[in-house]
Image (cartoon, rainbow, N blue to C red):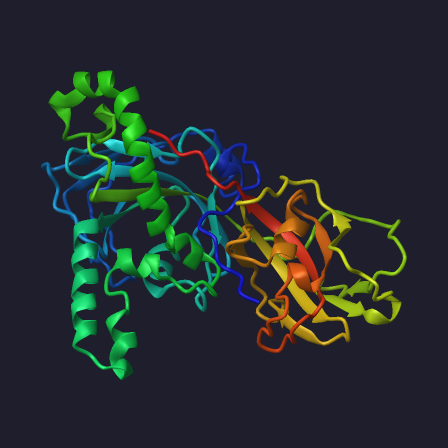
Length: 415
């Protein structure tokens, strides 16, 4: 079963951001930071100079440049503010606030700072791309980092790869499509991977945000843009958008807002009044991993069954949302064909029929975060008459899914 990774993850509502990561005394004070020592990180990305962030740690920073236009490249980064909170460690879930800054004129293209941080992911050494793992692990909460994007370079690289492909035989074709810079690597990140890899796939998200937001922000913010154009060297002086619909040169500026231990299992209330004729689901008392007994299954299901086993109280999943889940899948003879429990890491995917089988989408839409759901999916809502790996054609599929997090289809990001 192909479970595609999603881009952004839903954050459980935050009150004081430092309440999750700092002591009480830190919550009562604000520190201003203007990093001048150009700290570096364990990443192969090229370090950028000439960019400054000012403002209180943990609040929306003001970004300025030594000169404009600023020449930005893919695979580049700068640590703009060093945080004062807990240190990010392997296996933790981090949440970010994001801002996208045009490096041609210094304007803020879009920002998530008007709402709670919704860009969250779990970082693991085994599943997070090494450049991003090295950039994030060891940083402190409230650290602000910039990553450079130059879509002109991406286009050039793509064209070069295409030209090379024409002159290369089929045995070398894989090499010619290998991503060679961050923008390409982000866009082509493995869809089977989890954790920060899905966060790292933000090239898709950032390009969408910059392209979509720029045209609407241009008209709505035109008056503020006129009044602040004299000081374009500071991003704080203008939140207006670029006049172009596609912004090829920009920074993804993000601030680490929290680091927490990620949820690993459903956390709601057990449902006791289950209908008869369903498979019996039991769980490991320590891990929560489900097992299934098919002897109680009537085997007469011809339509989708979506039975809540544990009732969560979180956000409601809607079509198009991205969710984090733990799941296992079985055939009706009890053969398990898929599970992510052995990895100990949740899987992220988009609840969309363009990404998943219809029964999986229809069964999860309307469920709440924290729930565990039993899905019985008939062949016409599964893989139909087509065999899929170890799944025979015309198979009824049975899943148990723990919904851990949900991110709305279009997290609100605006200038």
